[in-house]
Image 1: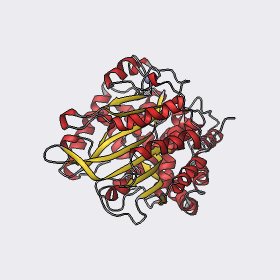
Image 2: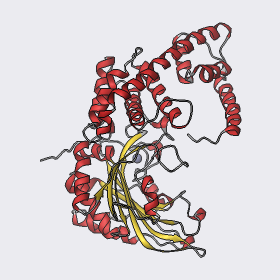
Image 3: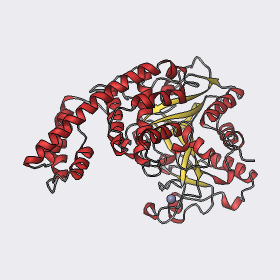
Image 4: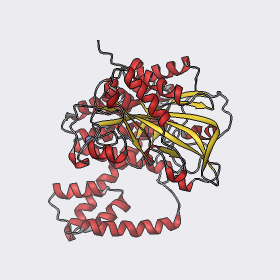
Length: 469
Ligand SMILES: [Zn+2]
């Protein structure tokens, strides 16, 4: 019998499982951090809990769990492959000075293999290789626990330990389970042990990957495949951080109160559960894709990238609207505007040249309303906000197209493309595609000319603002 849980069921099962194990389930924090001006968005489950990981008492106690909505726009251009999204949910559990590695690793292993039903033989992990320069030892504790679990699951002991990072890159996993890495498996704020202020906590982490044998390794990413290969054959499901050290003048000392911070990607776990390396096939995204197929008459197989971008971006924009953001030219509102505009631009590829958001938003609201009632309650409002922005951007697009035809009479260089983008809000990708479609010649080095204009403008705006997007 194969067990296939939906993403909704996995979320519920995780929270129930953690509640049974003494965790208090806390509500998601909004996408806009309440008291943290250093960042625009909640980008991980840990972020809203940082004060408690650093020592403050949480009103919910010392064992906490949740499913946190997150937005990361740093890699917005990567959306379109089989696994990157700007919006995602992170399943999280925390031990604030209670249990540690010996409980966390088997706990998450049991959840993934017994509750979700993932195949142990396809699970691979990474552990911290140590940092001799700072006197931090290799994380043998975590590796030892993993070894025991793998062997108990029937995987032969000689497949368990792989050795060094160099060896992992060199020979690939070859069926081995545990690979040791340096910086990749070290957690501290800012990520760099050298730059940690005195007293700051840090520690090793251990990542869990799922292998999809149906994905062929792509040699463009290296001779052999391994846990951290980016070809898409291995997908990271989650990461347990063990905060056990504190920076001292001499190096590192053990923390008096050690914490566990686990974050796992709900969509990726759900994709593993249905044995799909494509996260867009899960129940939280597929209905949006199907709706796009209906509305456009195009098929997902022919239009993967555009449909993925639209589904991801409109879902993110929906949650931003639910959390009180409106499209604007600054900070969070600017990012929301960018998500919406990209969705409209990619909709052109599907031939969706009329307003279609009102046909999509109810689908998104329907997917999330059961677990996040606020999404259902605000569905009409969200639709109104997003539809208004869609309409106004389509007007922009029409004006931009008109202006492009004007420019075409005298020649189009990167300078004109920049004016279109900057003044008319007409994205450069759209300009160049339109130019191609209408046989409008572009100057040979339009890209350099455009970049020059952009760099000049960036230098100017850097002087005016410290806004980070
Ligand atoms: Zn690979």
